[in-house]
Image (cartoon, rainbow, N blue to C red; front, side, top):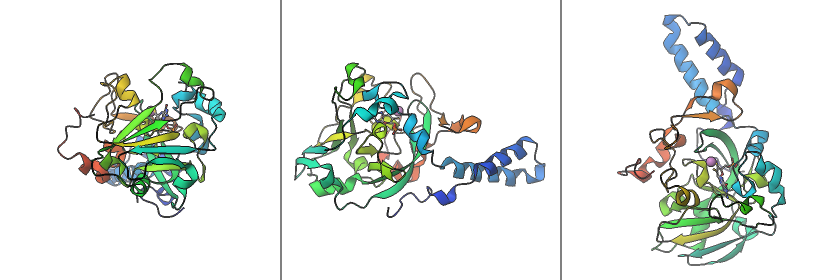
Length: 304
Ligand SMILES: Nc1nc2c(c(=O)[nH]1)N[C@H]1C(S)=C(S)[C@@H](COP(=O)(O)O)O[C@H]1N2
Ligand SMILES: [Mo]
């Protein structure tokens, strides 16, 4: 593991959960007015730090969305072992100088794998904090040579019905597809992850290689990628094609844009118990400083 990116997200910042809970109890007990401001700040600081405590390996690998293995949260953990992940290759095509079918070994060769502790916010309102291992997508795109006309990057997941039981049900139009605008794909926060917690990517989390775009709803972070295409047209994406009003192409986490069937103002941190039920959803999932400039002048409600 080499450098870490987002400065806020390190293990060192983590406040022990006991301290956080203590503060909450003191507050609830009615702090003296004089101490109230200080106390509130203390709680805020503790909450901010606690907010970035990685979930446990158990939580990250037992509560998943990977519809190729079923729509239940426990289906991926139960069935994803059926997926063969070696050998693995990714077809890279479209507007690139060096199109081809690259083995996973070729893709990873020479890459420095770093740890990135990111929030993951599902559109369904639950969230996790995951210590991913991976490298910037831009590294790979630069290696294959993006041509000037390219404006978007399209991704596809493996679709192998013998190994993926969920493909028998036409939930979405398989294969699972996703896409990013080129500048989003080139952003340093956008990674291809090959593992988590320092171990190879568990199948249920998208082995052997998946996308992670931390400021967008989780469904943009497509798993088990077998194809990457550079194109000049906005690509068709699985959830957007399924219900365009519910799932936009951009899918930036936005507490101000309600899903047609529920508010996005709050989220529930998996495994957090009572205190993690009504966490305020952060604009761009907390990555506003890093990514807001990508959307300058854009109406984020219309282009959701
Ligand atoms: N191929 C594929 N990728 C996918 C999904 C899926 O069903 N199929 N689910 C998405 C959704 S909705 C979320 S919230 C995240 C969940 O990632 P995790 O299981 O690693 O937490 O994966 C995303 N990537
Ligand atoms: Mo999701």
